Length: 411
Image 1 (cartoon, rainbow, N blue to C red):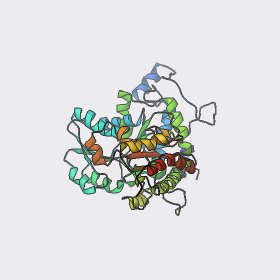
Image 2: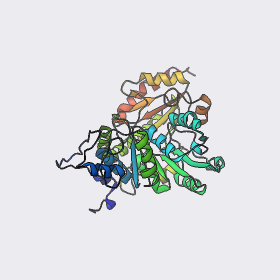
Image 3: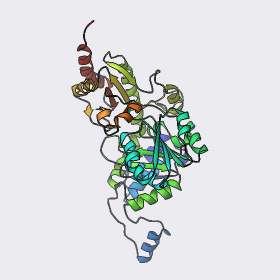
Image 4: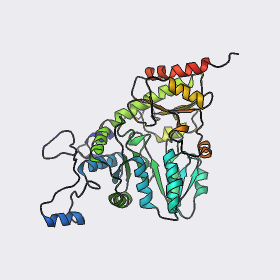
């Protein structure tokens, strides 16, 4: 059990890639330096040339960033990880490293709004086309393939409707077409889902979310094999420079230490909240994979991790709950505005519960027809359930929900 390869998941989050200097500090140090010095000119030349290991410049070699990368790679089961300045820069670095003009992507139509805009407005200018399909329609993924398809890209669960994609099935489709499957694992983290073990080739993270866990820093990460990630994505990051700062890496490194505990707590609270929301008369529909009427409930039971290490522990369904109120945008806004404790912000993965209106925030720049295809209606509200007492979250939501119900005509 002293072999790190045999460590349990929580141990990896705390002990993998421990960073300790000659000062023998117990908590990892932050290496806030832009550059590194050498013993002599010959050593500098060798390190720059890559014939001798060592740090060169913090744009692409920094001990604190490297420790975060190695720890996250261990938790995801990957050979290599490249940390970036944000989740979007992680996606951009991956696409720019692996694609060229004339290539084609098949992607879920329910991606994060900015990812959709990246494909439609940025990659398209460089000759890369994207076809969007429903995440759960395997035949649509097959039909969208072209001879020049290089990447299948999916979030699962997605933002904000918590639809799931079958990772193992999509991996088979991708590999049959000689393409790569890339999975955005932001919502579940490696605590609850390890896409590489299900056949995916690359995992993307917005470290800004659950990996941090307290809404403090921006960052992203790409995890996969040593060739595509350790060579290609790293090469792009080294040259183009969308680098993670050492301070942010230190925050994320510490965040990984509590990730296992936090994710299970988020999920347990979210499940209780989803059950409560389903009983509220002002709500038309609740989206949460833990509810039996969720279209991919059975898939979640197979694909997701559990709330404990015991094989009999309940399945974990994530910390995101979305719901539609009866009425339109105005009704949704009234419910949001009536809250006093919840944070009205689009970020998620925080200790604090956040509430937002996706149609006018996270997906506000997505064309209306694309939002409609993705099922994002004007009466939809997204909750990222934090670590407060669930009863207090319910009480805060109840103010607006009860007011909406009371305003309906009687009879």
